[in-house]
Length: 289
Image 1: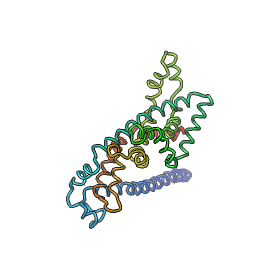
Image 2: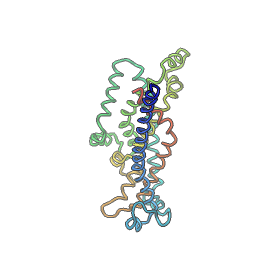
Image 3: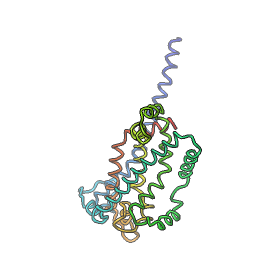
Image 4: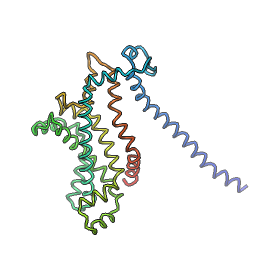
């Protein structure tokens, strides 16, 4: 009897765990379908004609998979120019942010002076104040410094608006880097820059991947800063060009859907390339806080 009671008590937690796991899997599957459905509808619309867009349901497949909408998107959006501009702004801004945020967070984490503590608080305040609320002073400063309608001006603004979050993110990962490795490298005669680039930076790959993906996603899809700082056609970004397809008079939805698919591909490729480091970075950040 005692053995049977013990066996029953051991089976109960296992049954509860199984039911909980099944419930979580069902909920996550439903959420996955809800998130994937809009993307599939956009891809489906990108192959439809205008007639099929209005006469068929969103879930119905097109009569034939044609690439006419993608050709129209390439011509109407001047894709060779807008895609290049967006890629240039994103790549340069993310590269500068990765270098600046990493070195700044390393200095804040290793130096105990009050100045560095003040700098950390300053960056935290920068996160609490969204740059969307400061558009007017940002534009005034950029206009007076001749940064509007220039490539380096929009890149500078992307770096300025993203550095606060980048420093906060990288600083939380600095506790994972053993300080003993830095001390050993310093004893061997390494300079400060060599210690960072050869000892510290390789250990921060998950954090760097997390920063690169999050900032690249934000900059690539940004519309507000790009539309505020850039008015010349040869400097416009892909997101600003896509918005021109939606107007009060005429809206070319099928071409716009094709353009959206094109704009999503680079970020999707970047995420898949750095997915392993991104997941590790989010896990380490959650544990180390």
